[in-house]
Length: 100
Image (cartoon, rainbow, N blue to C red; front, side, top):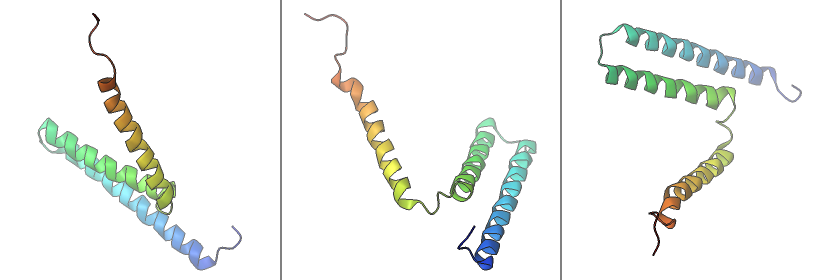
């Protein structure tokens, strides 16, 4: 950890604690929603929304993806290109079985 000041380390520790508390709170929200008498669709929507927020926190902070903007955009563009190729691929193939 050479090159890091005590203040930087303390700031990182605070960030990790805030994210930890947020993850615990979001888990409590997920459990709380399970006790509400919501329709299945609403309960699943809220659970998925909370899960996406939690996943974003974990990926952004613990996997250090917040500071990797350029790499994230490159991967996102590459994913979009592969998605378009996979979606358009069947339109370039011959549909049907009998030729002639």
